[in-house]
Length: 589
Image (cartoon, rainbow, N blue to C red; front, top):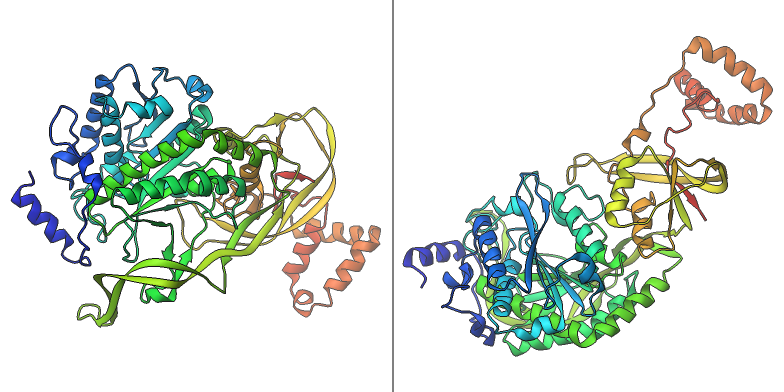
């Protein structure tokens, strides 16, 4: 039973939050109060979540209770040296990656705690696995294999406290959003700076799951939905066949099961104006730095769950259990159809890739289950604020502004060519699972190189890196490559992901994340006593260059600036650094 001290603390931490709509659901019957595998969450009455040590202990208790079907694999060590564990559940008792990848049963990858304050998935997954271990849910492993990561961000999980998320109802003590180095793992799916996301890439490549579910808790406005989830919609997806399969074969089954158990499933959307909800919703579209955007480019059906932070922890965890159960039903019933959609998607990759989207200026309209609100003057902030009233308010036509205006679209090359000295890029591609080939010695090719005409560095670091935004020009010509170069053919399963990683105009390219900052620095210079006589000879021997120079001199500021004139002459000499501001990865069209 919940002690009066715990109850007082829980109420105190909720006092500043909007009032609740009373909830009761059939899913409450999923909780157990007796038996050796009652979870810490259940023991607390649905308000607590175990710490790392207790979590690992319970994971091993599950495995001990069902050793023929459960096994545990450490998929990585965190920066602080903690194990990141994954439980593998298979009726056949074979836990190897090869066996799971070749299994005739579909495989579901469940990931919890990427933001470890948002830990609903851990406690829901433990309840589900407990029900398998004690024989209550024998049906599950008859139909699917499960991969369960209870805490991905293990270091952030142990930065625990009662005051980590001011707008979230529980658990009473929760972890922190970022890891021990203050990096957000759900911004790391392209650059792979964290051990956790590198491990996820490895798991996906080795075990080949058929569905990937990443469980979060959302911030923002109040509304009636307790479980919201989604993926990039078909009208903006680069792999629309996979999206349509999720719409057709997965979402209806999950929604029906949630509704039957007393939950209200909703769309994955955010708010355009947090001060005025009726101004509409933001239809966010994930890029590949996020789990669901990354999964999209891999043709991997991926669902991002965002439980509603203002709903009680118990309600959210039970809703997550039901969602996972619905996903299992959907996979088991439609495995062949999902697989066929993925296969067709891989075989019909586009010739162009949209790499950046903006919000539409004109909205679409949706029905939405909101919460009534009012404005008031706050004595503390001395301005107008929003107050949600805890009463349903349904919108028949609420505006929604989707990110569907194309800002940047690139042609997908036939291949990229990477010089061997960029070993960090090559290593990252290999971890991602992108296939690379060694170039034959002295291969002559017609290739395109990007030239950085302008660039702007971010004024402050983001996710530990100083990002750069370029304006590109391109030059095509003959290049002779030797066997130190590596080729990335885009006609492969991960061709779309490779394009986003390697094209310089893609916002989540390794280039824009700062993998190639050395091309912005010059390391060889010229002395004026050598440049002046050399330039005089150069201009006499090259009439075309002399004509360009005369044209430049018509610019008054250039004509009056000796340093600018010297810089131009040096830049147009063969002594100039030919790699300065040249994108080193070549493209073949």
